[in-house]
Length: 109
Image (cartoon, rainbow, N blue to C red):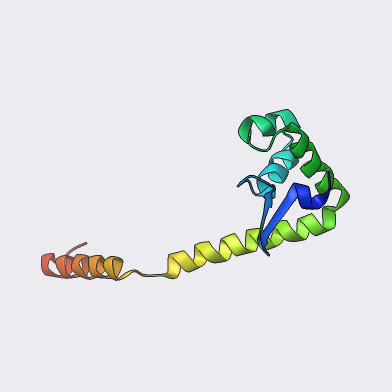
């Protein structure tokens, strides 16, 4: 199966199995954890058995490139989680302010 029929590159940190919304890292991580292609298809039926085997074969044939991609994805996910944790919405800030005022008035936590 040609790569262009197998993978859909949506961005530097997003590669999907062509024709699905399944990121290739889902299949690869399952494979790395020892799941068989049939078990992976049970979890991601939209991919199908042939494409699951093809993704695994692509991973094995291009391991260094795919591992680099996986590292980028993990870093991007960590960065996004950190950014979300640092973001403070106006509502969240107002709730913190009200809680602080209530705590201050009551003299305790």
